Length: 230
Image (tube, rainbow, N blue to C red):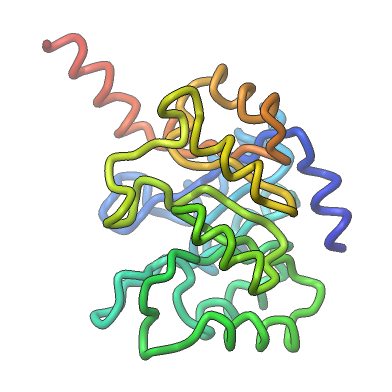
């Protein structure tokens, strides 16, 4: 199963279909239709958030899923599938991949990522684990812990990388990730043009995830309106 997913997405685009509770398109039905449109366009897999959205998208598209669950806890800044509870819930949907934060920050309830990975391997041995990293140090940690896939998702979203972008300086950060990673790298994070997506593949990324530039019309419309009103 693991090799099958990696074979399907190699050199391809994965579309992220997510809408948080404060966003206009927050609805598992809407996200499933968004995923349907992505499939019709040629997306080979979908990245999505929450058990209900995963299940709706599975029913609608039958595409492989990179699943996660964004949950905020008072005692931790980690929010992408932060605890074993969320990891287990996402894996139980049958999602081929479970993605979680690997940024070296303290997790909710003091849980240890090494313990979570060990438990996941025991309960869900056929499920791939994707590390949403922010720095090269995070990449090394993810590899040491045995994650199957390295993602660049959190680069630009942690205190020490705030404002950064994987496309900055001719993708210098992404190039460094590709140098040190000894397993598949999936580029993700502010890949907002077709040309950037293509370049990620040309650099050697296993696949590329695009979300906001495709599936968040509020963000897309705002860019146009800001330009017109300038």
